[in-house]
Image (cartoon, rainbow over all chains, first blue to last red; front, side, top):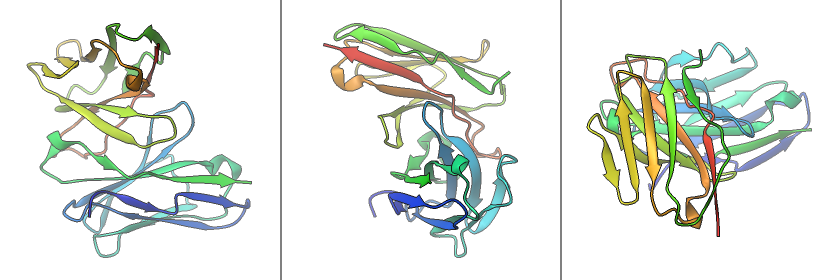
Length: 115
Length: 112
Protein backbone atom coordinates (compact mmCIF):
# COMPACT_ATOMS: atom_id res chain seq x y z
CA UNK A 1 0.00 0.00 0.00
CA UNK A 2 1.94 2.96 -1.28
CA UNK A 3 -0.70 5.64 -1.51
CA UNK A 4 -4.28 6.60 -2.12
CA UNK A 5 -5.80 4.90 -5.11
CA UNK A 6 -8.89 5.92 -7.02
CA UNK A 7 -10.90 4.06 -9.58
CA UNK A 8 -11.67 4.67 -12.36
CA UNK A 9 -9.16 7.24 -13.59
CA UNK A 10 -11.54 8.50 -16.23
CA UNK A 11 -15.28 8.23 -16.65
CA UNK A 12 -17.40 9.48 -19.53
CA UNK A 13 -21.11 9.24 -18.98
CA UNK A 14 -24.29 10.50 -20.54
CA UNK A 15 -26.31 13.12 -18.76
CA UNK A 16 -28.85 11.55 -16.46
CA UNK A 17 -26.83 8.42 -15.73
CA UNK A 18 -25.56 7.45 -12.30
CA UNK A 19 -21.85 7.05 -11.63
CA UNK A 20 -19.90 5.66 -8.69
CA UNK A 21 -16.26 6.26 -7.86
CA UNK A 22 -14.11 4.35 -5.42
CA UNK A 23 -11.27 5.50 -3.20
CA UNK A 24 -8.87 3.29 -1.25
CA UNK A 25 -6.99 5.40 1.31
CA UNK A 26 -3.64 4.70 2.90
CA UNK A 27 -4.42 1.79 5.18
CA UNK A 28 -3.53 3.37 8.52
CA UNK A 29 -5.29 6.67 7.73
CA UNK A 30 -8.55 7.05 9.56
CA UNK A 31 -9.73 10.22 7.82
CA UNK A 32 -10.88 10.29 4.23
CA UNK A 33 -11.93 13.31 2.19
CA UNK A 34 -13.59 13.95 -1.13
CA UNK A 35 -12.89 17.07 -3.14
CA UNK A 36 -13.96 18.26 -6.55
CA UNK A 37 -11.80 20.39 -8.81
CA UNK A 38 -12.59 22.25 -12.00
CA UNK A 39 -10.09 23.90 -14.31
CA UNK A 40 -8.39 26.94 -12.83
CA UNK A 41 -9.83 26.42 -9.36
CA UNK A 42 -8.47 24.88 -6.20
CA UNK A 43 -9.99 21.68 -4.87
CA UNK A 44 -13.48 22.25 -3.42
CA UNK A 45 -14.42 20.33 -0.29
CA UNK A 46 -17.31 17.86 -0.65
CA UNK A 47 -17.34 15.63 2.42
CA UNK A 48 -15.14 13.76 4.87
CA UNK A 49 -15.17 10.68 7.08
CA UNK A 50 -13.47 9.69 10.25
CA UNK A 51 -13.44 5.93 10.17
CA UNK A 52 -16.94 5.02 8.96
CA UNK A 53 -18.66 8.18 10.25
CA UNK A 54 -19.41 10.95 7.77
CA UNK A 55 -18.60 14.02 9.85
CA UNK A 56 -19.27 16.83 7.43
CA UNK A 57 -20.88 17.39 4.08
CA UNK A 58 -20.58 20.57 2.06
CA UNK A 59 -23.72 22.65 1.69
CA UNK A 60 -22.77 22.94 -1.94
CA UNK A 61 -23.38 19.24 -2.37
CA UNK A 62 -26.78 18.51 -3.80
CA UNK A 63 -28.92 15.53 -2.83
CA UNK A 64 -27.71 13.80 -5.97
CA UNK A 65 -24.37 13.19 -4.30
CA UNK A 66 -23.85 10.55 -1.67
CA UNK A 67 -20.74 9.09 -0.12
CA UNK A 68 -20.17 6.05 2.04
CA UNK A 69 -17.34 4.46 3.91
CA UNK A 70 -19.05 1.34 5.24
CA UNK A 71 -16.17 -0.35 7.04
CA UNK A 72 -13.96 2.60 7.63
CA UNK A 73 -11.62 1.57 4.85
CA UNK A 74 -12.49 2.31 1.20
CA UNK A 75 -15.09 4.90 0.26
CA UNK A 76 -17.48 5.36 -2.62
CA UNK A 77 -18.90 8.57 -4.05
CA UNK A 78 -22.07 8.25 -6.09
CA UNK A 79 -23.58 10.91 -8.31
CA UNK A 80 -27.12 10.28 -9.42
CA UNK A 81 -28.74 11.79 -12.51
CA UNK A 82 -25.51 13.39 -13.64
CA UNK A 83 -25.54 16.86 -15.14
CA UNK A 84 -22.99 18.54 -17.37
CA UNK A 85 -21.99 20.78 -14.47
CA UNK A 86 -20.78 17.69 -12.62
CA UNK A 87 -17.89 17.36 -15.05
CA UNK A 88 -14.78 17.79 -12.94
CA UNK A 89 -11.89 15.97 -11.35
CA UNK A 90 -12.98 14.16 -8.18
CA UNK A 91 -10.14 13.85 -5.71
CA UNK A 92 -9.92 11.63 -2.69
CA UNK A 93 -7.43 12.27 0.10
CA UNK A 94 -6.62 10.63 3.38
CA UNK A 95 -4.87 11.65 6.55
CA UNK A 96 -4.12 10.40 10.02
CA UNK A 97 -5.99 12.21 12.73
CA UNK A 98 -3.70 13.72 15.35
CA UNK A 99 -1.06 14.17 12.71
CA UNK A 100 -2.12 17.55 11.49
CA UNK A 101 1.38 18.52 10.49
CA UNK A 102 1.52 15.72 7.96
CA UNK A 103 -1.08 17.17 5.61
CA UNK A 104 -3.16 15.10 3.28
CA UNK A 105 -2.20 12.54 0.68
CA UNK A 106 -4.27 12.72 -2.48
CA UNK A 107 -5.13 10.05 -4.97
CA UNK A 108 -4.70 10.64 -8.69
CA UNK A 109 -8.36 11.52 -9.04
CA UNK A 110 -11.24 10.43 -11.21
CA UNK A 111 -11.92 12.70 -14.14
CA UNK A 112 -15.62 12.76 -14.92
CA UNK A 113 -16.97 14.02 -18.22
CA UNK A 114 -20.73 14.27 -18.60
CA UNK A 115 -21.86 14.49 -22.21
CA UNK B 1 -13.90 37.67 2.30
CA UNK B 2 -12.69 34.33 0.97
CA UNK B 3 -11.20 31.92 3.49
CA UNK B 4 -7.99 31.69 1.49
CA UNK B 5 -6.82 34.23 -1.05
CA UNK B 6 -3.90 33.82 -3.40
CA UNK B 7 -2.57 35.86 -6.28
CA UNK B 8 -3.61 33.66 -9.22
CA UNK B 9 -0.68 34.75 -11.37
CA UNK B 10 0.51 33.50 -13.72
CA UNK B 11 4.02 34.31 -12.67
CA UNK B 12 6.29 33.91 -15.68
CA UNK B 13 9.94 34.07 -14.66
CA UNK B 14 13.24 33.00 -16.21
CA UNK B 15 15.08 29.97 -15.02
CA UNK B 16 17.35 30.83 -12.10
CA UNK B 17 15.17 33.66 -10.84
CA UNK B 18 13.81 34.01 -7.33
CA UNK B 19 10.05 34.17 -7.03
CA UNK B 20 7.76 34.65 -4.04
CA UNK B 21 4.05 34.09 -3.49
CA UNK B 22 1.83 35.26 -0.68
CA UNK B 23 -1.39 33.84 0.63
CA UNK B 24 -3.80 35.36 3.14
CA UNK B 25 -6.25 33.41 5.28
CA UNK B 26 -9.26 34.56 7.25
CA UNK B 27 -9.56 31.91 9.97
CA UNK B 28 -7.45 33.10 12.86
CA UNK B 29 -7.90 29.69 14.53
CA UNK B 30 -5.82 28.00 11.84
CA UNK B 31 -3.01 26.05 13.46
CA UNK B 32 -1.26 24.18 10.68
CA UNK B 33 -0.20 25.53 7.35
CA UNK B 34 0.93 23.84 4.17
CA UNK B 35 1.97 24.54 0.64
CA UNK B 36 0.90 22.04 -1.98
CA UNK B 37 2.12 21.83 -5.52
CA UNK B 38 -0.13 20.72 -8.36
CA UNK B 39 1.05 19.89 -11.84
CA UNK B 40 -1.32 20.26 -14.76
CA UNK B 41 -4.09 17.63 -14.62
CA UNK B 42 -2.47 15.90 -11.64
CA UNK B 43 -3.37 15.68 -7.98
CA UNK B 44 -2.01 18.13 -5.40
CA UNK B 45 1.11 16.96 -3.60
CA UNK B 46 2.37 18.22 -0.30
CA UNK B 47 5.35 20.50 -0.87
CA UNK B 48 6.06 21.58 2.66
CA UNK B 49 4.55 22.38 6.02
CA UNK B 50 4.91 25.91 7.30
CA UNK B 51 6.12 26.39 10.85
CA UNK B 52 5.74 29.45 13.01
CA UNK B 53 9.47 30.10 12.97
CA UNK B 54 9.64 29.72 9.21
CA UNK B 55 11.34 26.82 7.53
CA UNK B 56 13.52 26.03 4.60
CA UNK B 57 13.76 22.97 2.40
CA UNK B 58 16.48 23.29 -0.18
CA UNK B 59 15.52 26.11 -2.55
CA UNK B 60 12.15 26.60 -0.88
CA UNK B 61 11.48 28.84 2.11
CA UNK B 62 8.12 29.18 3.82
CA UNK B 63 7.18 31.92 6.24
CA UNK B 64 4.16 32.42 8.47
CA UNK B 65 2.91 35.72 9.83
CA UNK B 66 0.10 34.98 12.27
CA UNK B 67 -0.52 38.61 13.17
CA UNK B 68 -1.21 39.53 9.57
CA UNK B 69 -2.58 36.08 8.69
CA UNK B 70 -0.46 35.40 5.70
CA UNK B 71 1.85 32.69 4.49
CA UNK B 72 4.59 33.09 1.94
CA UNK B 73 6.61 30.78 -0.24
CA UNK B 74 9.96 31.75 -1.72
CA UNK B 75 11.62 29.74 -4.46
CA UNK B 76 15.27 30.46 -5.18
CA UNK B 77 17.22 29.49 -8.28
CA UNK B 78 14.02 28.38 -9.99
CA UNK B 79 14.10 25.35 -12.29
CA UNK B 80 11.95 24.50 -15.28
CA UNK B 81 10.52 21.67 -13.19
CA UNK B 82 9.15 24.19 -10.68
CA UNK B 83 6.45 25.14 -13.20
CA UNK B 84 3.20 24.24 -11.48
CA UNK B 85 0.32 25.68 -9.48
CA UNK B 86 1.07 26.30 -5.82
CA UNK B 87 -1.81 25.94 -3.38
CA UNK B 88 -1.84 27.53 0.03
CA UNK B 89 -3.58 25.58 2.79
CA UNK B 90 -4.26 26.80 6.31
CA UNK B 91 -5.68 24.11 8.55
CA UNK B 92 -7.50 24.15 11.85
CA UNK B 93 -5.48 21.25 13.20
CA UNK B 94 -6.60 17.88 14.47
CA UNK B 95 -8.93 19.31 17.08
CA UNK B 96 -10.96 21.19 14.50
CA UNK B 97 -13.60 20.09 12.05
CA UNK B 98 -10.56 19.26 10.02
CA UNK B 99 -11.61 19.86 6.48
CA UNK B 100 -9.10 22.04 4.73
CA UNK B 101 -9.99 24.82 2.38
CA UNK B 102 -7.75 25.39 -0.58
CA UNK B 103 -7.03 28.64 -2.30
CA UNK B 104 -7.37 28.78 -6.07
CA UNK B 105 -3.62 28.54 -6.37
CA UNK B 106 -0.84 30.60 -7.91
CA UNK B 107 0.32 29.48 -11.30
CA UNK B 108 4.08 29.59 -11.90
CA UNK B 109 5.72 29.18 -15.27
CA UNK B 110 9.50 29.03 -15.55
CA UNK B 111 10.91 29.85 -18.96
CA UNK B 112 14.33 28.74 -20.25
